[in-house]
Image (tube, rainbow, N blue to C red; front, side, top):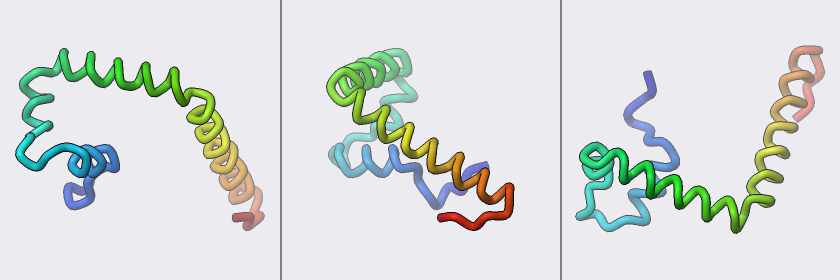
Length: 79
């Protein structure tokens, strides 16, 4: 179970971006299908505009994590 005192990054980002009077968690619980549609469209447009940058960042992160884990597995201490 996740520690409730530490909110996920997405929760913190939404809390910072949206007005305090808007309870986005309640809206998502009340209207799950429209929330999925809005988030899917947002992801689609974000991917169209910045897809290559996102893939570069994810592939760099994945390569770094694989290198770190393989090095730890074989006893090397690379960081």
